[in-house]
Amino acid sequence: MNPQRLRIATRESKLAMWQTEHVAARLREAHPGLAIEIVGMTTKGDRILDRPLAQVGGKGLFIKELEVALADDLADIAVHSMKDVPMELPDGFAMLPFGPREDARDAFVSLEHASLAALPAGAVVGTSSLRRECQLRRAYPTLAIKPLRGNVNTRLAKLEAGDYDAIILAAAGLKRLGFGERIREQLPLSLALPAIGQGILAIEFRADRPDLEALLAPFVDRAALAAAQAERALGLVVEGSCEVPVGGHATVMGTGLVVEGFLGLPDGSRLVRERAEGEAADAAKLGRALGERILARGGREVLDLLARPGK
Image (cartoon, rainbow, N blue to C red; front, top):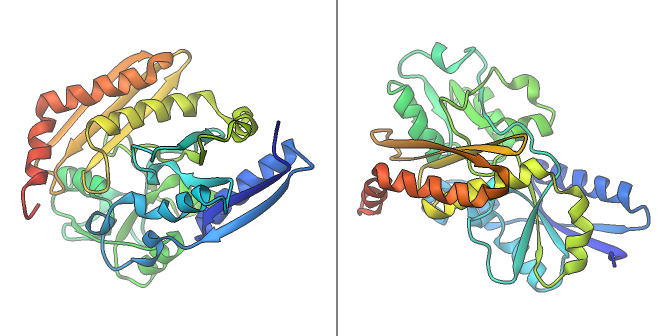
């Protein structure tokens, strides 16, 4: 039986609120009598903006307070960008993708330059992601990669203030906020594999709430679910987090699935990239196998180097 009231926990950034309002609107359409309350919260990841996430605890900083609200029955579900969700959920929690995946690629944004390839040597590119830094340094070693934190609007403002020659953001967030026209170039997957789960909306809830699982089930997109399963299985094997430069992307084609992944060092000096193909029904199995292949072909040495003091 579906609930009559639904409390949705969310971060209060403009993108998070857009995502939450989108989910709420879809749920209201399907269930006209459902009373929905949005519970806005500020997370530790939103408050600490002067250091890269890798230095202050990683992507889980954006969701911990929301999980506490679920555990304490202050909210029923939480809306996340799946790329912000750690590979392992805490005991007692479940998660489902919501709707089709948005564009998973990274986007190049600049006021004066049309593409990454058009940037001159020494140009300053902003990103807070070790994943992006690794791939950019590998492909364009003459660029100056500088940290960039804050929400989408803040990052765009720093670009406009002249602090950077270009910045790299998730295309999905720009498009959802109506900034799609700011994208000068969408980075091809051959150059930059996105974050695991990038472009997928995720709904988290307590595992002891089958009523919520039933409520959300009609909104689960088959391709997004298979991609999430493959990519998150890959991330679990290769220890995917903000502290490890790792990326992954799965593409569903009919009943088949292709998943690509990489693991590297932030300076781009080492990068192990592999791909696997199989059936979408075996998405998690494919992701795990790809992760093991990456580790076997040089990934373990990368993790060992990352674990050394000073890295």
